[in-house]
Image (cartoon, rainbow, N blue to C red; front, side, top):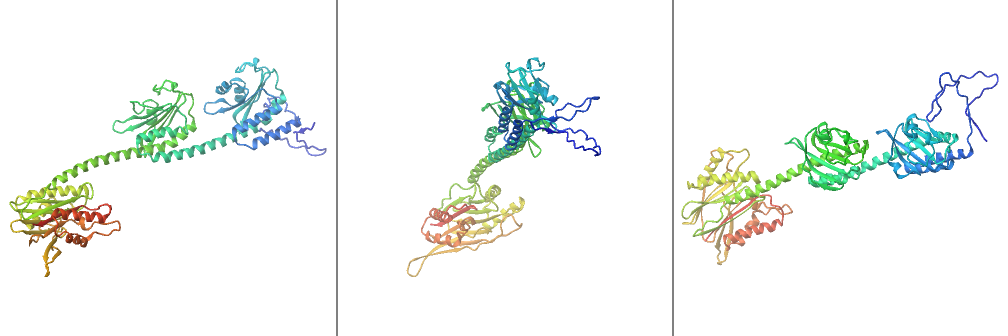
Length: 627
């Protein structure tokens, strides 16, 4: 048989005596240390049989060609069987957190063995791991510390798996025959144990990295999905479903922090996949959940029965993991997982849930903010609807009835409420003042200012002031109630039905249009639309303003059109304005129509021109036609 001399002696006659080589300690060196007084161990020749050499080559190939832990262990088991015909094979790996050995791969054992936890120092495997040396027992019945999990077993050989001076597990083989394993078997496994241990550790590392990469991918998917959910209840339910993809649990609970009550309030729970309803509040420091919130740190409890902070809610719970949800330094809530197995949650679970908790906190904060905004919008919509109703009540419900004229009006707010105003003021028999105004701005501020203006206008109407004097009085009143950058343009026209005259004063409003009808030399009707040149400063900007006043005589068939700039400034999809020319063309075509028909025709023409384009300004229209 070939021999391998490990003494490495190269002495030759006459050569100087070589310096003694200091003893080296290598990983996987199972030799017992020399005791004081003992002679140094003589170099030995280890005889390696050809089948064993082949085994080592095949083992090296097997260890170097796979990073899958299950595949690796299958190959190791098959290769060991080729040189040691065992009956039972197992690889136990050390759980560093709990410091116990757990069966990772086995052949020949019963299924129950996979649930057994072997503490260091217990049994043959635990002792081999604790003492960091291989143990061969010819008859397990004589071994005092033996764990009897299979009554048929008689002999056992356990070799620790050591990587970088750290025990990671034990390779254990058993036989039903007494004294089955030999010293050569032991030395062979010792020779290969460090290589097997290195391969197992590399495979575990690869598996851990692959699992972490997969977990991060899933966490990224979960983060993207929950970010798009803005309903709090839907969000919490979805979190529970998605979290199951990365961490197993039997009980899942989310409690949200109530800033007003300074308590965590139960918001969502599921037990064994079914949603459950709870009425539960937790104070800071109360129970495991309250402690996690108070400390603002995750808490992992391997056995809740041994933790004095635990508040019994589910008698079957054994492990618990609570992680606070914090966003921008503010407590959002606590996410709590429970399991029926002892020591179930580990550092990987903690890291995964802590990573996800940050995104969950952001999503919950966004959903709650959206909920508050939605509730505020609904309240605002209700308030605006009420304001719209109030505004409509401030405007005249019916046009005044006159003997020699008819009046029609229409108001269309660009939003729920607007800043335009029109009114009819009774000045006694046969006399009525028409007021058309437009407050700067839009929506609620403009509507409130218009409501104030309407009240002032009606309080002054009892004095029966002329249009110019009425505008002056309005301006003085607004100066007393001056608001920065707030003003109103308004036109006042006083109709005298007895002589069909119209007195007009303008405070910056759109100049009214006068439509008159006459006959040419051939007797055919001629329609003329012209602008009444009335101007003036808007109300509320300058004190002590005086306004000009015009008196216009009318004839039957004439019409005067008062409008806000929302009519002429209405735009279509191309950004083109309706303009005065189109309005004049519509009025020319309506010279024979009633005031109401004229209003309807103008409104329809503007609407058709806009073709569904959103109205950006209020639209007010008042038409007076002489009978």
